[in-house]
Length: 175
Image 1 (cartoon, rainbow, N blue to C red):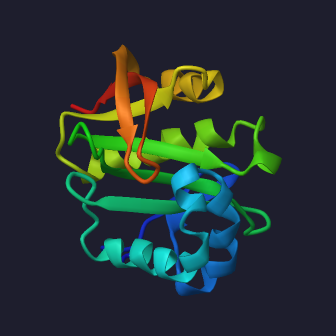
Image 2 (image 1 turned 45 degrees about the vertical axis):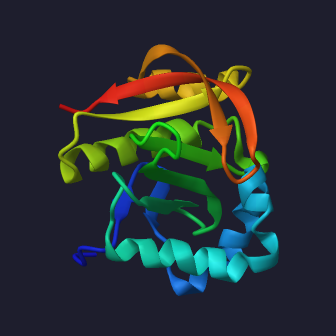
C-alpha cells in the first residue's frame, strides 16, 4: 500500500481505505446516508468515479477525499469517512457516516480517530472542522470523543439540497 494516492488504515476491527473500482456495489449501499447523496442515486456510478478521481490530488483543503470504512474480518462496507473543503466556511471539514445496520457499535469513533491520526501526519494544517446538526447527539459525541472542541453554532446552507440548517461547529486542532 505504498502508492501515494492509496490510503490504508487498519484498526482493531476496521480497514479505512481508498475505494477501488471493485467497490462500486458496496459504495451504492452508502447512497442513503445523506440527503445530497440520495440525489445522486440515478448517477451513482458517475458519483463513485468522481470520488475515485479525487484520489489523484488527495486535496482536503480545496477538494474532497472520501474513504470507505470496511469490516476487517468480512471486508463488508460499514460506512465512510471524508475530509473536504466546507462549501460555506471554506475550511477543511471532517465527516463520517455509518450504515444504520452498523450503528451503535463504536465504528464511527474507531474510524474517525484512526483517520484523524492519518490526516494529522499527512496534512500541514492547523485544524479541521466538524459540523453536526443541532439534534444529532450521537455524531456530536463522536467528534467530542475524538478531541474536537465545540466553538459555537452556525446556520449553514446544505448546497446539494438548497436548505439551511443549524449546526454545531467544532474544531480539531492538529498542530
